Length: 100
Image (tube, rainbow, N blue to C red; front, side, top):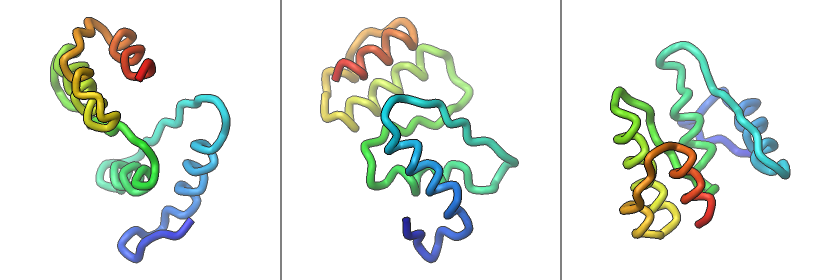
């Protein structure tokens, strides 16, 4: 996988993410590290060629997070009605997105 000149030093991580993405089935890949080392940029850079729902965590109520998740998913999946869906918890919200 090629990295752009402005994105340096993450070849190993990008390759691991690509292999995980291409593996059949699902997996959880936590990405962690010190502040300001490029974790979010790594995710954004990796996800450019793939269908992606990217939601940044912040201090907000669970209801607000779910609402924002459904809005982002509606845009990514080109399903505008998904943004208006009533999901009382994450399981319902995730099931709605998976059904699309």
